[in-house]
Image (cartoon, rainbow, N blue to C red; front, side, top):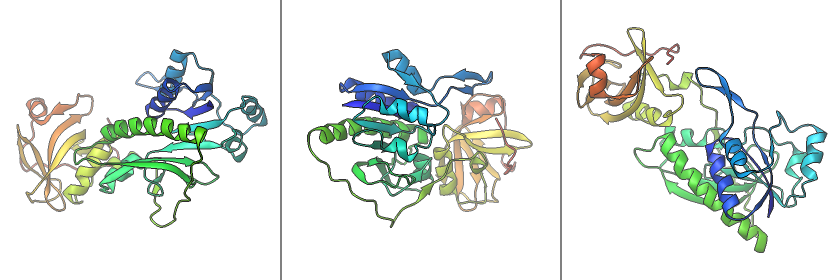
Length: 314
């Protein structure tokens, strides 16, 4: 097929690479403008832009898709379909209708579960045991279009947003190639989404990543995994910001936030119910370290207390 591809992060880049390998004609790649990144705030290309340049694909980075000049440019391509994956810009209705088969989205949840910006993190936070990829025809709503195909996978007990992202990115890349082959040679039967079970995956904020030690340990453990790698589950001790990267639930009890044990096996912190055994963490300006290495340079002792602070930054 002759395709327009719209996407920005690594999740989208894997699908673009799969479409190129499958022999599709990528008429144009749309991706967001370069953004400042890193300590120096240098402009960095998106993962999709880097791949498009590597493969010699035509590239377009509009700040929006609202103007008629952009619409005319896209119409002139004569695309069979527009494939969208984590693009990050709103597609106006005229753009949704530009390609012969419309706009087809690769979404990282089993719709209607977790419509919106952060389906991977929200699934982990909610304690979902399964998630997956939905390929849908886009309409004017937010991830509300009819589903062409879906495939699920389990969420492992130790999955972080990073590990689950990688699994879903590979699944999405494989499934979009399958769906396009079916659209090209047969007719799929899109299934309207039921409203029952629909939920909204709001964008993750840094404030959410602040650990409230009065919550139950299983909830905090899910936050640690959901906010790994971004923005990182955070807390403070004596004014020093800490990020917790890996932890497990412990059956100990105590006043929330109180360190109950601190040793090579981990740092046990009491929660609202049970406790969290912190296995990997990082202090402001430092590196991610296993608990034993961290304690060698930043000693902690039973009885000290971790705090909730919306001002924690690393």
